[in-house]
Length: 223
Image (cartoon, rainbow, N blue to C red; front, side, top):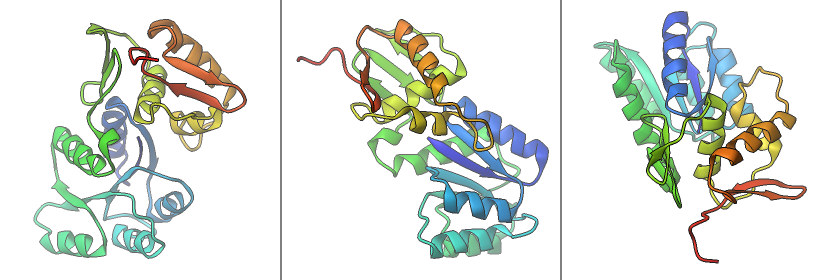
């Protein structure tokens, strides 16, 4: 899943990015409301963690503009402890949930999982495709009940393929989800990651659809 983190406090922002990335998601970040508003309009995100106390443009204004533009991704707002009015205004503006600072990162991840589950069955914390089993909460993968060590990019790639198993994903689409927004996205490197992943998964798990991309298939399913 692609998550946007909007937080102007550098240390907290870095902690959020690290924790959410560690849960297997692709994370992009913004440090002010104007940048957040722009990213939320031109990029597709599965969820947003949005601080309300932002410079340039406050979080409530950002949220209202997104909702007015019919950008309906789930939004978890971060509020100051005891600021009940902020919570009410946030919900009225279109927030899906709120969390008061300071908070435990485990609670934020749990609330984020709950929001993502509303997107459909593929937003579950655990996914399975035949003998392959992936747990986003613990960032681990099992094949035939045996642990499978993966690099961070391999894990993100497999997560995306499992979210949409059976669907053909282009190299460009995979690259856009794996690399941060401001990185030099090179879709050719996806071939390298796919090749490495193929060597670790059961034979035939990743199919190449010539001219289109790749898809994950259940090799245990009858043909």
